[in-house]
Image 1 (tube, rainbow over the protein chains, first blue to last red):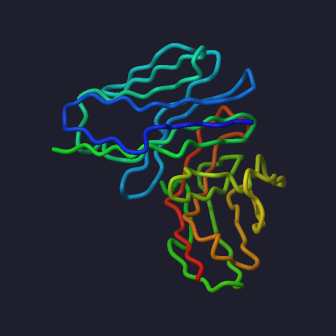
Image 2 (cartoon, rainbow over the protein chains, first blue to last red):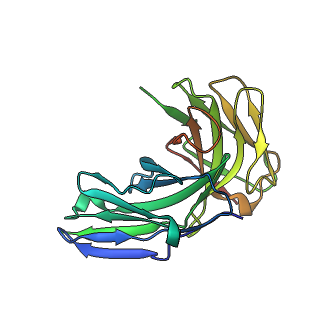
Image 3 (cartoon, each protein chain N blue to C red):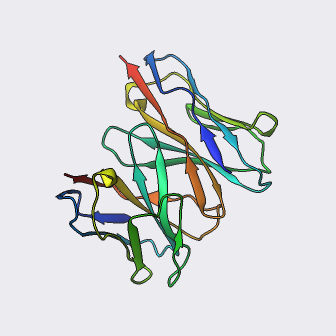
Amino acid sequence: AQKVTQAQTEISVVEKEDVTLDCVYETRDTTYYLFWYKQPPSGELVFLIRRNSFDEQNEISGRYSWNFQKSTSSFNFTITASQVVDSAVYFCALNFDNDMRFGAGTRLTVKP
Amino acid sequence: NAGVTQTPKFQVLKTGQSMTLQCAQDMNHNSMYWYRQDPGMGLRLIYYSASEGTTDKGEVPNGYNVSRLNKREFSLRLESAAPSQTSVYFCASSTSGGSRSPQHFGDGTRLSIL
């Protein structure tokens, strides 16, 4: 069975701090895709990144970076120099053959 | 550029009533999905349609039916609403089925069943 665990329910930081959101997944499949989505207070879901199971390169996009480690089944997300606009719920998800499983989400609050 | 449009945005039903949630996408995507989001549980897949003319069950299909009306539209029906179906419902679409394509979401429908 596929499962995604985001152990951090809520995180609160002060602006400009770095913050890492953890994501651990379980799957028996060898080919799968991992995703991160952002859900701001307005409620919509915004796609952030996709990573396939064969690509373990880390990725950086501006203040965002992602660390995929297949050996530990983790796909962690780091925000550098956090800003108030980063406040949102962040979801990690695992997709195999249309079976998309989301983690419970991590609510990040960035205080000014 | 509307993307994925869901109607209605809010709805209150009484137990036993029926309701159809509408979803339309204008991105020429082949695959469409319905999810429900409950507090502390993330999103759970109800049904999906990998391509026009096909539908399949997801993780939590009981109590729901779907119709892929055409390539653009994918509706979700509650035949006899129950309080346990109180949730926020999201429709999504992607370029193709399988696991590769990112899914693009609508703004959600907040449904309350009394």
